[in-house]
Image (cartoon, rainbow, N blue to C red):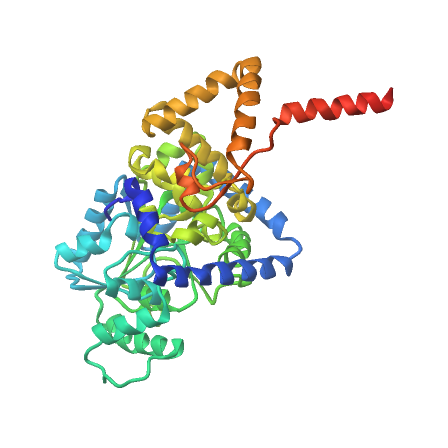
Length: 478
């Protein structure tokens, strides 16, 4: 997937000017937030579960090498195969080799952000293999030639009318007069089209919400059941997962599940939680003949032991973007790569480089809502600040911004000079604000004043007002 993060500002401007997108994003603001809060309020121990989930992932990350080795042993003992992939290229090569050995011409796919990260669909098409997305949201955006705009609701940027138009355009083998005015009708149509794909696919590919070291199992959490059909019906099942998905035991996985669905969709539990361990056994009525796990690093091990290690606790619930005012305004595609929202503002620089995604850590109001709702208590604002510091240290941000910060630092390190400068600047800005006490335009603040008024400051600085108040207190005591 091409990274367009360097063009975040242009992407954001286009998103703000798109009336269809703005209409669709209203559902993010009105849906996810209230549902999550209701689910949390109904579970008194939710915060203690967050602490437990954080501790489980911290422990797993501290002993990641041991748990990954234990996981590989269990997978092999169950008759499966593990393929280690240091890079996206390594992962694609391993998957292609498995598909070639199976003679695969059609591959069904469950929802997987990791396969988006490695650009698997585009790669398959170049290699003459037809990938079919089976998650409804993923299927819709595949028809449009787009990428997900949200990690749990890939097509949240679209309206119902847009989906209906795409179905009529692509499903030209179906009667033209069919009624697709209701969401249920759109869902029924997708099911009819996808049903035959499950049975004709040679290979099924899924991601994994968890990898369990104790049993060698992969776990997927879905609401549609498409993941089950994807991994049970084809002859070969490939799990593509990143290394930080490991948890020590099934009990640990169950603990984290209790905060996952509540944080993501406001459900107590997702409709399907499917645990897969190895290929079909002789007594099993169904299942794949082959079971493969492709374990991807792609920059994650480099995050261990750094200020960004906490990001590896992420369980991809999407709560941070569901509550983010910046995401609400511009949607996911503006972020320019696989991972949008606050988690993308931290993860994308880690995986793709801050030189390609330096705008993302700056696309934040630092309101702190992302950290407040994160079920794994990931300090997202703190890590965005770390990326800002690295961007500044490497001279990657605009020259005007760097010089402005240096000028501010010059004054901030000299309190007397700072007080003198502000005592002159604040009254001047107060006068410039005029009778309405607001700026419609202010030099060096055009990014703000182009879209909203900027309140003018009071005529006296905070320090001056503080001294006046203290003097009044001293006078009253005297």
